[in-house]
Image 1 (cartoon, rainbow, N blue to C red):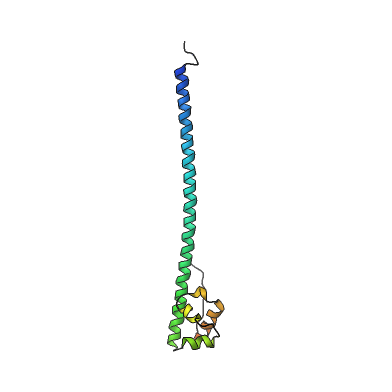
Image 2: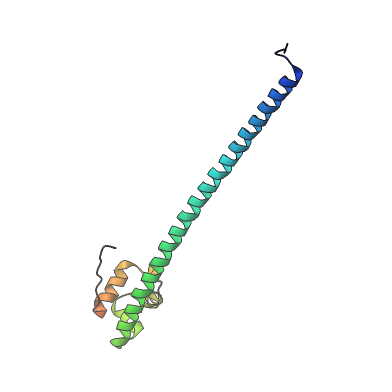
Length: 126
């Protein structure tokens, strides 16, 4: 007759329970690591999006600066004289033409563009 307290059965059940607990602990650790990796990936994606927006702004600034420079040269306008005429601080035009439009106020940029006969148009992105 089998005893419900057979030492071999008790040992086997204990080992199975211990093994299951170990698996659960490992799964919990893996889930926590996976969650941390997901959060890290989300942060990296956000940083990449921010960098992409900064590069896009830089590219647009360079395009505006190049347009202003080419128009100024086409009109044979002296940079210093143009800055004085527009009542701008020295170096403003150089900053703008170099693509550093973030260092130039919108008011100053529009003043230069108006004097050079340029206008800005805005369209929704497609």
